[in-house]
Length: 245
Image (cartoon, rainbow, N blue to C red):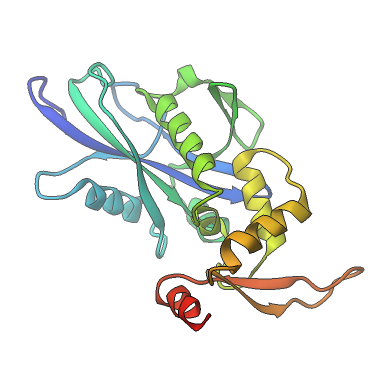
């Protein structure tokens, strides 16, 4: 689709993130045509006349990465006048969190154009590093995607303490240890956390109101006590537990 300069267009851009081995990863692809040909970019597409932005984002994700039950939420709307050299294009960015075990086989399929990059930030600048250790500078990203990524990362870090978004990176929200959850928080925040303080914080915030349930103890491996496994209660399950109390 080639925009006409005297019209307003809406696009969606996807911030697809996952956590692997204690690192926060972001998926990018190289643009195959102008503008910004050959530059790294977020997956995106134009919104059709008969669909919502959320529908367009969902369709794009299903086409590129058919992940079951993905978590998706809108991050921000980017509407700077000169953000796209083709004309007046407004972008609505969506954050998608996917557990790595669900994502890994899809990225290994032949023809996959998406690549994963370790995402961190140094001050106001984002840092992207591929599996070989090569870095991608902000100037190597298409359009204003550096700003979109920076906004998405800050939004994710800001919400992880008070929302359930951190749980969406877990392989199994129905059976996880607090150690697994702490690894997700540390990857997102790019910071080591005190284990005792983290445990108290999570149990106080989520277990007290019925959103976190202890389900069993994992078999002990080596020294120490067996790990306790938990389940994130959502929807009616959490409401029912609050009423029981």
